[in-house]
Image 1 (tube, rainbow, N blue to C red):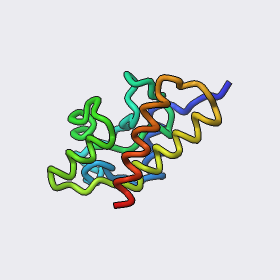
Image 2: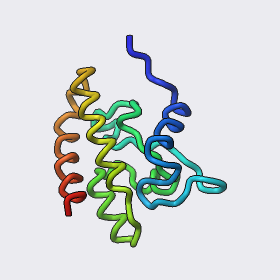
Image 3: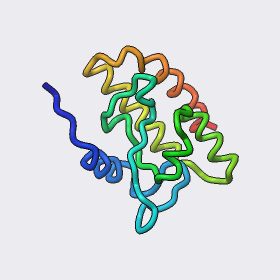
Image 4: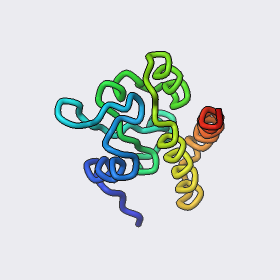
Length: 126
């Protein structure tokens, strides 16, 4: 059985991968700005609690994003004048796509993930 790390360990690993800042608003996650893991593909859409599906987000962005798609939340962040870390989001989505292909399962998440990958890749190419 493939055991996944616990939430705290996944947060540490995501911060090492993406940096210790919120991928949505880029605030440093230090002091009063609490770091959380944000599921790119929400659990309600079939997203797993795997490191590949999680990015570092400040508590504010994680709460306010709710179940908005990554591409829709990126647009909202930009509307607010923030500069989301598109490379980190696109990289995590691509990693999740590879992880699902390798591990299998996650049937419900696959179409949503494919759509988000296309949309975010268009944003990073612009």
